[in-house]
Image (cartoon, rainbow, N blue to C red; front, side):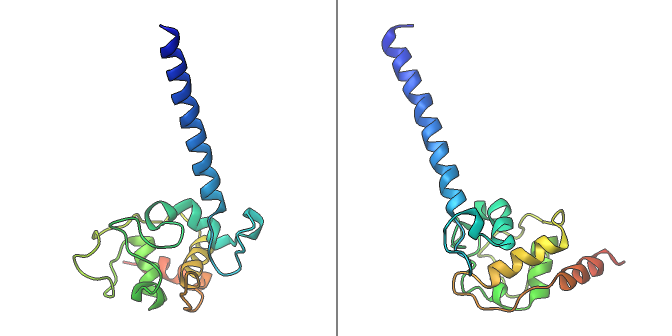
Length: 151
């Protein structure tokens, strides 16, 4: 391989590593919820951590949506009935407040999250980015899970 090709190949590999590193640092700095000063992981709440691990890819760091996914700030679904939001996130049961035809009919189902993780992330979304809805409790999530499992 000519020397010029080696330098180009090495530069491309280095660029990829730098871009990946910056992306990871950028995601780690995201948060934006109440109580998050942006001072790093220590400032994150349990709900913001679950959001970063499971939701940011589709809804973005500030809940703004990433194209076809719903915007979370000011959303009637997010700020409305917590049981409807819980059923949407856990089981993909589309709430009546979701505009028909505007967003994909399904979203990933997060049944694998524990009740406390779901309550934390739903509370985070309902109290971040200008939203001021009530917290979702672990008991509410557990009740939704039990109701869905019942025949």
